[in-house]
Length: 296
Image (cartoon, rainbow, N blue to C red; front, side):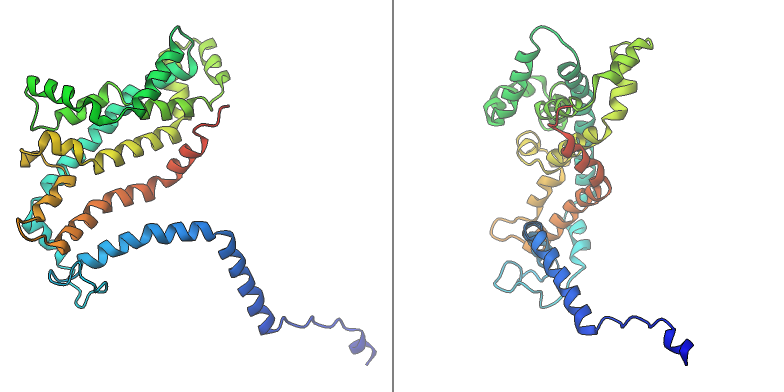
């Protein structure tokens, strides 16, 4: 009896009501803490949901007061390939965005390195001109550039859209320059002591350390060119064989009728590669944006 009396008693379990209340309090606290993020997430998701729901509707139901499909037509995603050569347009978009991104990086990395890590006469002036070029509306330079490409005979092709990125892209230079400032100079000085010249220090030391910033810059350039409509319309509007996907949506517009379900199905297919790219590269993208502008 004495041994039984002295045995330690098991602690009483938490009542179910208390556990439920504690769990509910944690959920409310999470919602309150992330209220702004949740609201922004809903705002961004609703248009995507609208595009998808419209894409699987019948043609006579699309863009009406009914937001929920009365019948689900997933075959619309296959039908768009019969109504327009989307694979060809996809290849044009991939060519345009891919080469423009490569060109922007090849021209922006050396320029950003020179602005961030070197000291030379006129450096501040060149940086101010780069910022001014970012603020300059693209419509200001449309007429002289278009006249130049007409004289060179490249209108109707993707060349006028791709080549400028191999020479100067103000936003890419600015973004990379801000990220390069976060990398201490000690690494570059150590590389120079070991016998590296400026190019070797940039290629072997700076670029590997700046991968997040380079990834963010590449994604910004890729997204801009993938969604670009004005440039392709200006230079390839009359040459349908060179249309990118941004102009392909025009294939579903008739003179008196627009097939909104097909247009939304094509839009969903156009957005899919960009969404997949962001999902796989979001860590580098977020890291690159986080450190950009924080001077080390």
